[in-house]
Length: 277
Image (cartoon, rainbow, N blue to C red; front, side, top):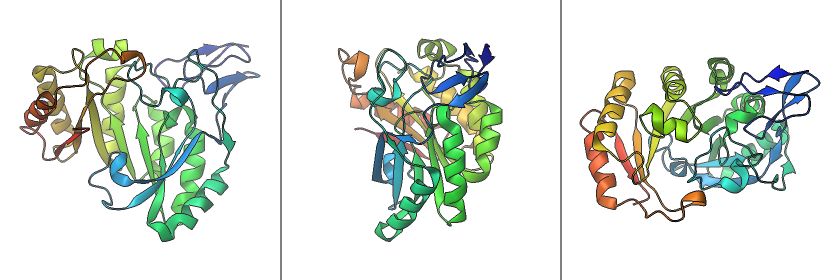
């Protein structure tokens, strides 16, 4: 029986036993289920600034967890070994970690400076049920939950998560629909996600500047102006691209161009940071 997955803008129509574009959601007997639930591929105690979050509990650590799968196809992905599972790559070995186990681990790391759990590395929203179930427990223990996401999930998914999420870093890949199409995404979906998230929790944005793709000053001007219309106090991270994955033949972004685009954004936004420079 064919079933439509409603988690993101792709609305994959799946036969029984078939996985979606993300490689993490599957039709099982007519019901779309989260196939990567509790399957952890990466776990580390990271500085909060690495997410990157500059203005949310600076100087603290956060227990960062990832699984596998992603619903975009960014050719520069730095975590492609796990995020691109289901898109021509085999599943990486994973370890079962239940929501209770992860919440307990976070609590035990509190004495090391840990403030909670960050769902990151791959796209966490392709397995949003695991995020929700864990974040509920983390909240009960008095700790925080952080989401590092591409922001392409549906309003319904975001509504189910927002009561338990304290902060997000959302990738705003660029500011043209053409660029988003190249990555397999949709700009308007991300804009709606950012607007809704910013009304409910701490949000910071990241734009990776890829030479020849999204490095025009006029596009950054439009992007910064739009962000300011949502909230000029929303921090924006303008970051430098390094050759990765299918873009190993590209040059790293010129540092002066990163600073130039950051300066452009500062005309409209209170907090603009440069990264990878």
